[in-house]
Image 1: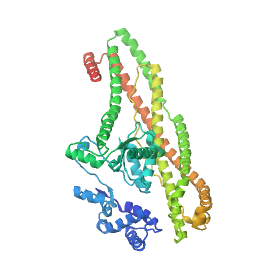
Image 2: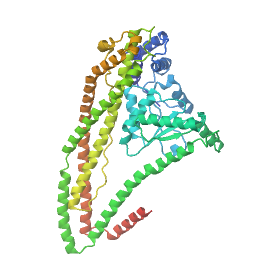
Image 3: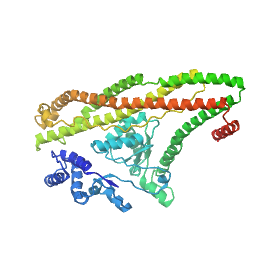
Image 4: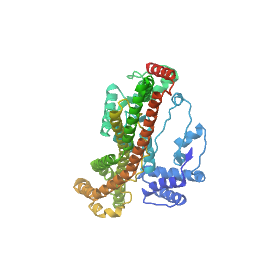
Length: 534
């Protein structure tokens, strides 16, 4: 288990302190500020941040000397650090080694960090897991609506879902035994499905289960009985999930391996065939082979990335344009969540309340811009992979005009770690919006007349050019990063292609020069064919 460094912890605490208009340049000062806030705050405003500060104050004396270190605990200790916030808020990463059926298959289960955080480090780490995981499981509960954190996480899944090679997302609705009957259960499942569709997740793989029932089935080794449920639903989920892991994912590897075997067999057959020609035919074939080699090598040497760079720039510009459109499409929702009658009401310090509402609004919409940039970064990476793949296909097409049987193994570009993105508007202060906040007169006029609409429009007009500047800057940053990545990958493709072409032609040359063992090659071909048949 690795504890957060002092800098990481200060970053987290600073975000919570900011919700109460406080700052700190050290952890000791943050501890004093947090203690002061806890003693002075009686309302539940900033409840999430208040909870974090309470845990920080409670656990800091115990953990201040251990920050940045790695410690080892038993399962009981793990449960404490996972469940007690006064301990868990100091943890960066926990590796739990647990022996069960899933882990015996080599599976690594990850609980994504910080789904309810606006900390860029947390959301960046969670996004890396989304990108690289073989499967994603999202668990919700029958009688719980999606929280704001759930919603933002699911929207992010929806942003990148179509970029994956296959649908690797599984959505589990737990505690369905709370339903009164099948009709009520169907209504809830339809509701969840519609909500996911609204988040951009179409045709989700949805599984209603009762974990209590599943536990009873496993412990008692008998079917779970309920007044209308046939079983816990877990067996159906496990069947579909294991089929995905053991068949769908495995088939990807098998298809790739079979293609490699087919290429190997074709090359071996050609080497063997050329080795059996008469001397005159071999001499003519050697001359032709030398010419073909030089032509193919020239095609490989001419591999450049100029046209691909232009395509990349155009794709990024388009992605950036639509990212701003999508965030502003949610503008009204962000405004309503921050400026609403539950927050702004008579009897409060309205100036302070308005500033807090503005900060919440800017944080929410700024966070969404950051999430859009992470998704755009991933889409850009997929564009680079596509362009490299198309470049290889173009080379093979040109090379096969010279030598029809030429085939290369697919080039696999390196994965690039997602860039970190600060939220938009993070450096704006409420003082810069005095004109817009000045449109507020009193709660009654704000909500019953046209003031809230006027303020929303004014904020949108104020933020529009700032948003455009943000996405333009990030678009330029993306191009700077990924144009280098594209250039490096095209160059690596070029070098790999030249090396593979040399190997192929050297093998064919060896066959013509009778330096191959024909019997050995025939034996290898038979083994390859046997593998394909099996």
